[in-house]
Image (cartoon, rainbow, N blue to C red; front, side, top):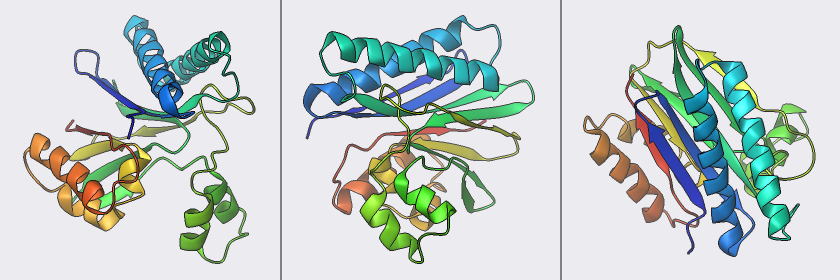
Length: 219
């Protein structure tokens, strides 16, 4: 299995990124790495981190991946999801495109605060599915938006208070294989490195059909 995920934690500037590339073979890895590197450059160069800054960085990443795809004659066939978490003066902010996710943990409870930009989620939101589990199983990997691909490009963002014990960014290699209850249970492991290893192991133990990337953050 070729790794098409790319993750980055920038402790000096207070942000983290996870991306999951699409396109097969080398294209997905190129897309995710290009997007993360362009996003990182934009955030480091910015005097502040807020919703506008994160969404502008995503737009720059979108353009960079499209340019790279055009040069490889893969325009329209190479893209990536991406989720960013960043510290702000008033707390935290998160922006994303696609179905890479962000969670927060507090008091032994887990909350997903990104919403997948996928056909499955759209059908559920429109009330066109009576069986959410079946809908996700058949349509979860059909994305409605992604960096580098043609069509709509509308990042979703949320501002978060800082009163949470831990945050988790992950690719769908984790969230597709491990349910929220088990993720929450593993997130109680005190040591971050051990916690990360156990999350990845849980996904692999359940079949590990995709690359698994996680970033854990304690404010």
